[in-house]
Image (tube, rainbow, N blue to C red; front, side, top):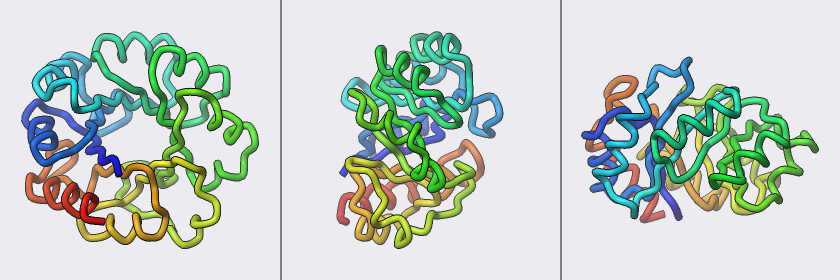
Length: 201
C-alpha cells in the first residue's frame, strides 16, 4: 500500500508528511487550485525530504510544454494528470515521467481513456468528479470496475481510508482536504492518523 499526501504547499508540510511515513507528496501546479504552489517551493521541499519520498506534480488541462517545463523546474519524480487528456498527450508525458492518470467514475466507460491505462508508465487513479472537494466516491458501486493497479483518491481521510482499502484494495491512496486545517495548510495529527490508518489496513 502506497500513501500519498497531496496539496503540499510548504517545506514544513512536506517534512511533516515525510516524517509521518508518506511514500509520496503531491504538489499542485493547476492555476485554478486553492493549493497552488510554485515550482521553486516544490523543488526545495523535495530536496529537504530526500529522494526516498516521491514528488508528484499535479496538473489540470494545461499545455504539454507547460507541464514538462514546470515538472522539470520542480524536479518532480512523477506527474498526475487531471482533466480531458488525449491519448497522445498522456503518451508524451509518459516518455519523461511516470504518470498517474486521474479518472472519474464516468471515465471508466470511455474506451479512449481506458486504452491509455495499459501503456508503460501510466497508472490509473480514481478520484471524485470534483477533485479536492472532500466528497468520497461510492466505493461499493465501483468494486467491479476498478482497473488493476489503480490508486484511490476522493474524500479520503483518517476515518474512512481503512474502509476504502477494504472495499476496493487499491495499490495506493491519496488525500488532501481531510488532512487540512484550511486549504493548503496541513493538520499534523490528521496527516499522521491518515498514514497510520492506511498502513494498518
